[in-house]
Image (cartoon, rainbow, N blue to C red; front, top):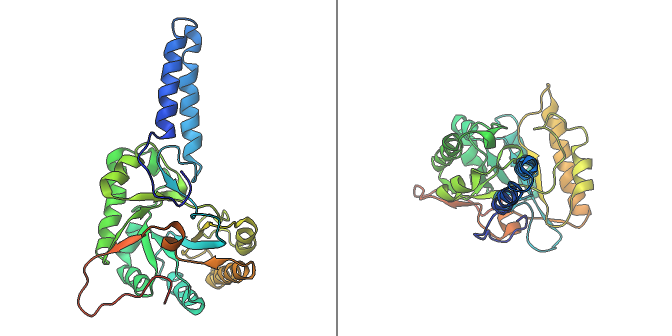
Length: 283
């Protein structure tokens, strides 16, 4: 599943393919024993390949774009909070009166809790992007996967929210993810438009690439971490400005992620009296 519709409990393509592979292998065994292993080998290859496609939904229901064909998109930022890049990005979004979704790394949220609270105070949405951003996380054990996602939930609870969405590092999914997310009350959301910026390591053509690839309903993947090299944050911000201007010139409405997919990104936890967070998208 790769649309913005609410996930449904159903037989996953991975499970269905696995059952078919084992059945075919069993049928081949008494006839051509040498070929009986082939369906199982192909199944393993398919599983590995499918894990690398963020919108495939092979192992579990995945939302990678918005509902319907409306000319609307959502901006999402991964890998923060970053004390150098995130505050400047928040100012930029304020100027344009835009709400975005921030998929934060739990370890960074623990180090910079004030930045998470400021992101929320300005009306943005915050969700779970694992604790350490291990690119091989989906190939780790189930306890490790549970710990990485669960610790980030705990870190964000300290900021006053309970995320409903999880985005796996680099968009890679795996067979253990569905059970862990169900246990923690989370859904998987990836993306449908990215520039291949490698976490802001390659930003020279960021705006041009996004604007060329964007389509109605796109969940756009960007990053709010500092590009390597002195003085490159300003260059990155200029690219984000180019994306916003280009989207609007192309007739796209930039909406909060929750509005694009029709589901809440997070729940607010009880807060001290007098703390009144703003509405997403209205800083």
